[in-house]
Image 1 (cartoon, rainbow, N blue to C red):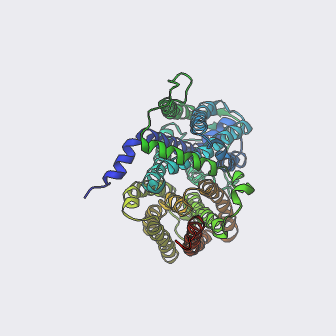
Image 2 (image 1 turned 120 degrees about the horizontal axis):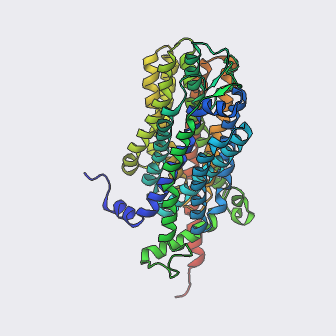
Length: 497
């Protein structure tokens, strides 16, 4: 049995350069999103700031990632603007990596992370949409691969940073004690989950004045070099598409299929705008109510599922080292890596599964799996072994939700709506806000509420998905009725013939 049929393989062969380029920019996205947690304490030393001050750079990155996702549609009207935006953003990420070692003030570091966040948001929106427009009904397989490269980048950046992280406090003060090294390891693991743990960190009186001893600058310069081939690949694609002044000005030779796909892509460009252009009255006039409900439900599901990913990654360490588990700091620190590794493996497996099964089936399996895992965690909350097993299974189940939901919603709306931008923006919002909400609940109610919040969110997400399937049927019936009425209008009965 072949992994892919001839049609899917021929589609990839026809668009291999575009596809590999969009995959590579998502590697750049993953590289940028995962480095901050492990390096945050060395950056605190570099900026000579307090823990409370340095953790705000997480918020700066997440907030401006949301802004970038919302504004990404501004660059999607033409292929030239899309590729120009991807080139600028991937190059900006390398520049941010290279200037971070020069930011000796926490405000400057926050500005750098804001720029990186905007670049990541634009990449998230533009790359998703371009791949959907390129493959349309066959996009599910390629979207799974696209999101696999986020996980791959998120695995690479901590590995690059690890050899350059300080084993001891990198600001040496007069009152440095022998047990501070273990405190530093504990604190680093606490902050590794996207900086979610803003509470209870004042108990670690790390120095802000003294001799700075850190080599983390080398890690950022290495990551800047690793990322440089990505903008080079985008530039090569622009040359291949005859979009650069130095390239041949004559149009590329297009076969009939390419001409038809390009014309349909131009039609899609008229519809796929940013969040604000989606609200233009001319584009909303005559749309059925189900059109808007489908956008809202798809966005709400990804708001919850991406929020669960952010919350779990941010607080599973805090839960593990708290009663009743009281796991060791080094052991608990592996949970975050296990979670992201399982997400990466899950997206790799989903490339094949999305070819064999439809997005609704994959989504049903994934969301039910998330609920089952969360319920079992509530039951076996005292088992450290089960926490590792469930972390792995949870990552495998939830990994395919975003690309599957994106392919499913765009398919329902016949690739004429603003689904991609709405879904990407909703996912970014959920990852930021739900994480803050869960953190506040944990701070006031205790660590067990972490599991309870994630379980409740899982049930809400599945209920919204069932509602989405119901609305899809209504929307499909409405579209069928509309097409019948259109046919009757265009072909009225002729009497007396």
